[in-house]
Image (cartoon, rainbow, N blue to C red):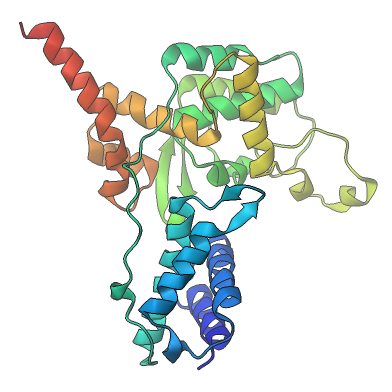
Length: 304
């Protein structure tokens, strides 16, 4: 079987039988497309360890921008996609390389960047709340920190999804896994204030309030006004810069801050795993170095 046919059938399997998200399908198609460009449309029976080694060298030397190579983590994403394809091939009794023979590159232990309470208040306080865009931005930042939502989970929210009276709602996260999310009283107040300033009945919880094109006004649900991930990422970055925060701040930094605050205040790791929507406790354990540091401070303070 040709490589291109195997990739096509694998993507169809991921879409129909595994019911994976559109974002996952796009990622698989991107990473496997790069392998197809490298290996040409060979027979999958020709995939072997020497070829994979050459592919890894190709990835390591690949410049996606002038003088900028792929990071080790991104290279591993390519290999993970290749292993998933090979696993699918083996499952279908197609002769090819066994995926378990391919190891991922070793990467440094992951660390997380988070904001202190003082930095968070500076971030929130740097927003001009006299404009509707300011109210929206404050509500977004408060929501991200209060709930620990991923940016895609936030942008997909509609008004009817969020119960502001109960202060909770359900969200469908990675792997289409549903989890309950709780909102702080402060975040609820800012979201309410933002919604009260709006004079529309559009579905999206957060809107782009810039000038709109006439032809798009036929969309009665306001989907064309829904904020994109990129817009929120840029808003968070510029707000942090305005607040004088030198750290690299992204929406995910607020998710890290949410988890860190929980752990430092005594939450157990399993509860934090559930609140973040992590499928594996291993993912949540990236925060343990933070709590270990806190334990050391407690030990030094109380044990002489």
